[in-house]
Amino acid sequence: MRALETRLDLRDQELANAQTCLEQKGQEVGLLRQKLDSLEKCNLAMTQNYEGQLQTLKAQFSKLTNSFEKLRLHQMKQNKFRQKEVPHVKEEIPFELSNLNQKLEEFRAKSREWDKQEILYQTHLVSLDAQQKVLSEKCSQFQKQAQSYQTPLNSKKQGIEDSSSEIPWICEPDTSCETNGRDEFIIEKLKSAVSEIALSRNKLQDENQKLLQELKMYQRQCQAMEAGLSEVKSELQSRDDLLRIIEMERLQLHRELLKLGECQSAPENKKRLESSYSPSIKESEKQRKELFAVTPDQPNHEKELNKIRSQLYQEEEYHSSEQERMRNEISDLTEALHQKEITIATIMKKAALLERQLKMELEIKEKMLAKQQVRKRQEAPVQVTLAQCK
Image (cartoon, rainbow, N blue to C red; front, side, top):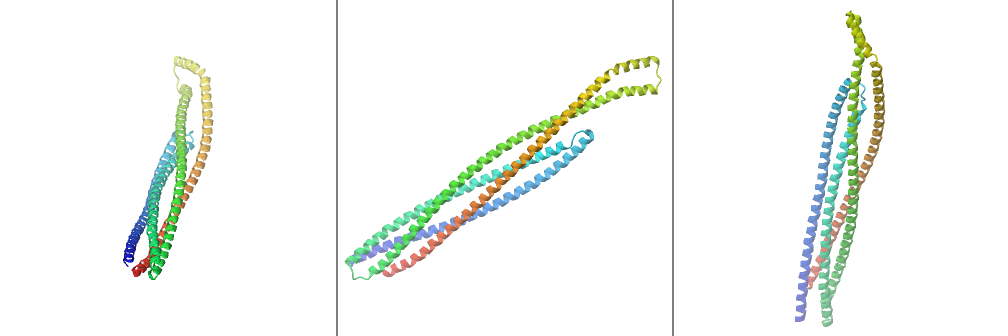
């Protein structure tokens, strides 16, 4: 009888240990729920941040559109003023410059958006790494708990076998066998849960590796796009300089033409003065000498005018060819922009898919927690039966 009492005391101690372990599991389940709530709050905060960033981008876009309209009106006024001064200058140059400036602003805005998306992806990866570490720690804890459950259950089995061999007339072994069967069933369920958690951890590791690879690819693409943007900016600056130089040369040529026109009008004015006034003979002779001195210079002036006209035609042809080349390059830039917009859309789709996958993983974790609660409820009647056996 004393041996039975000692064994019953040992079983009571084991049951107390099992109850403490179950309480610890309940606490862990509560912690997991808190973490899930915190993750949901983080997701809500992320969505709010995305919405705020979108609103700021819309506000910036509206400001840019207003500033562009103001610049366009200012350029139209300048073009009208230039048309009054220089009617030969074409209207296409300032319009193309405004288009180029607009495209530069679009490139800058898109590069800022890409930087923001890269920062968001990096923060998302950091949160995923933290979740992976937490899950690995939980898996190790579950494995340790399963091992701790196995040792007392094995001792219980040995004690039951000893008691059944020594005292066959006692009816308690039947109840102990039932409790042992239930304990084995619970242990099998715990092992299956541990295996599922390990599989989920491996899946999360694979997904994290894939995300890291995708981030590296996106970073490379962003670097290549930034390099292309810098090249485009340098080319546009060089073209702006060339256009300014061409405009300055045209203004100089126009001034020279005006001066030559004044030189040609000088002998005509002299003839009018001779016809209107009757000067003295000496003055008429002097004027004749001056006219004879001017007449041989007229063909030289005409030659200079022809040269200047030929230079103007050549410069106009060169400018038209440059305009065609600029238009072709602008079309190429628009195609590149379209391709970059397509890549951005694919990146956004991938981000949405990643968010969906995370939501699915959270749902799976919630299901696991529900399963653990069901197991706790199943373990409760086992404790009641053990108390009845006592």
